[in-house]
Length: 87
Image (cartoon, rainbow, N blue to C red; front, side, top):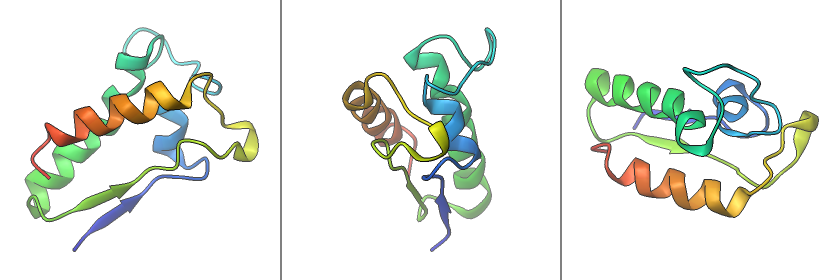
């Protein structure tokens, strides 16, 4: 089963955490938009390899100054969104 590991300050981790995501309107600014790029990657992987895939997110560690102001809300948001993405 293909897996995408994006914890520990890797690229997708940097998109979802507001402490490091300084991107503009398209991929940064609020919780919903911060999650957009990760969900686009998930959709692309599922389209390419099928729904038997997974993603690992670690929302709480603060490695390499990659933190979020509200990791609980981020965890709930990502769990709800990932459940909608056919994986």
